[in-house]
Amino acid sequence: MAIRLHTVSHTYTAINQPAVHALKDVTLTIDATDEFIALVGETGSGKSTLVQHFNALMAPTSGTAELFDVTITAESFKDKSIKKTPIRKRIGLVFQFPEYQLFEESVLKDVAFAPKNFGQSQADAEEKAKHALSLVGLDDTYYARSPFHLSGGEKKRVSIAGILAMEPDILVLDEPTSGLDPQSQKMLMDVFESIQRTTHISIVFITHDMNWVEAYAKRVLVMQSGELVFDGAPDALFNHPELSVWKMDLPDRKKVLNYLQSQFKLQTPMDDFTQLLNAINGEGDQ
Amino acid sequence: MPLIELQDVSFSYGKTPAIDQLSLTVEAGEWVTIVGPNGSGKSTLAKLLIGLLKTQQGTIQVAGETLDETTVQGIREKIGIIFQNPDNQFVGVTVKDDIAFGLENLSVPYEEMLKRIDHYSKAVGMDAYLDKEPSQLSGGQKQRVAIAGTLAMKPELIIFDEATSMLDPTGRQAMLEIMHALKASGKTILSITHDLKEALPADRVLVMHEGRLLKSGTPRDILRDEPLLKKARLTLLEPFKYMNQLAKKKQLTDEWEALLWQSAFTL
Image 1: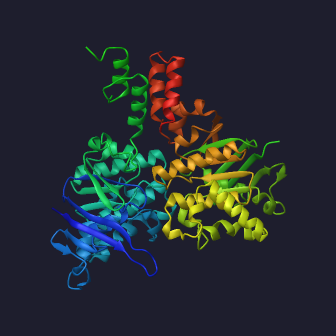
Image 2: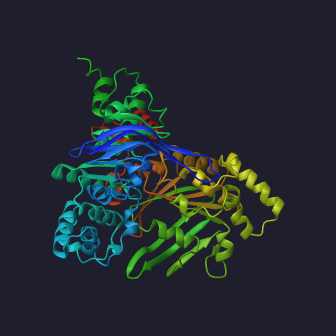
Image 3: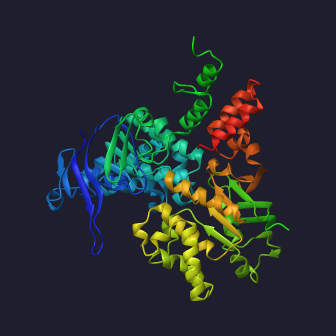
């Protein structure tokens, strides 16, 4: 296992403020290969705090985070002899609105910055940058362009390539499609799917949009008030009796089909509109 | 007389035209939703309306008055705007301060200010949070405070510029309910979004693409128009896919159309 959290709790404390229990006894494991995980939960449920424990940006207040061969606890986190940089290279975290952090004069330079910073030669860093850009679907016509003159979706792809150029084993994305129009969102999700399929790295993405969970995720984690309340397949989540307790939405398709099904008083859940039509016309019973 | 009237308005950032000879009107009391992809000029339009950007061609009229240097101050008082990022528009130390901020700028007397803070914080359901700091609020709650602050200045038109796009489903739902209440109270709403769900309750939908108006119509006309929406980089909502599927087979009865329309409001 690449990431193994064991009873991880995290409490934010500030002077004259009540303590905030952002994570409570979270236990989970994430493989280094072939995972495609959606992390969902309402605002303030602890999603962002959780992912910062995935790459040692934060330490548990109690419990342990085993990240590859390094064990992070409240005590070991302060130990300077335990290096966190190699972990952050293997588990790449892309913050929300990463495009705000683009700064170089050309796309290629921006993407090559991280591998160069991690000690690669100029030539090697550029080689890795070119490969990363090809993974996010940006060809050589983009290399010399200024990142500031790209569209929102392209900027996001450049900043994600910047993390991919470090060749992480796991890619963690905090609301990667936020602020994009529907088609650009889909294009970006397709990019993640193709990266996952071709490189077999594991991908974790935070989202509020159940349509993406349904369309892309193989596994879904649900956070509520700092607790991990669900860890399983998307379909199992959508049929879970506590879905509304967790303030989770259904994908659009399910909402509409459920509404139609109840209007026609059909008992069995429908997978798609054609099946629903067949059931209404009495063809589903034979 | 329309509340907003644009005639042949153009605006470019450098050489790239963001708004290209745009003409449109918004009537008082109307709920108009403008949809379009990133870069279609939607947000530039909002900035032109509140005088943050100056038109390079054409005229903008608000309640019969032409927008220029001499009128911009008065017109700004008629228009409130809610932006996308809840963290970028919270200026007060507490919720109460934040709502009061705009009123102080307008030199509203203290007694009147307290009355409005009380009234509008109740209107958005944030009256129990008046002494809270922004760090203690969710994104959706911050947006509701921003709305209260805007409403307290009694604008005639409220612009929502992608105001729900960074909120979770609960926050988004609460915002939509406030928009319905505003409409019922006679306010004019201009909602700018790429979420087609927010076009459903509108009186009129405008589709923008590359700084131009592709089409203006009722939600029923626009939301089924697949080629139009595709051009504007938007995706058909599920019920309208089914409508088109039935229409293709010549099976779209009035009953089906009504039922699928209803189902869209569950989204």
